[in-house]
Length: 118
Image (cartoon, rainbow, N blue to C red; front, top):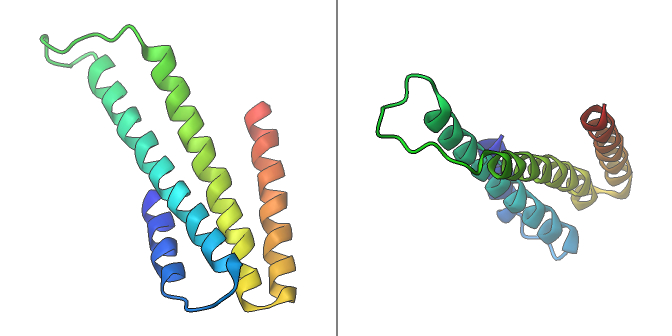
């Protein structure tokens, strides 16, 4: 997902439009990309440390709950940021497409929030 967000960011950076939506969408894509990458790196580090076959010299962290919270927070931030970027991207083209993408992103954000709370 970080790669998708980074690709989307690259595409948005190539658009030469004076509309501020381009900048906001690109910024949200950058936040999404970095958040997903951080979540993956933190998750991989946790798996390497807590795996039963980890080398004996590997330190056993006492901060696992905090790392899991960082993983969840950065992943959630990435999800909402990519939805924001997608919702804003339609406004670059037209008002009608902007309304469609904004509504789709809003509905997806509500569903993600409901699934997370469930």
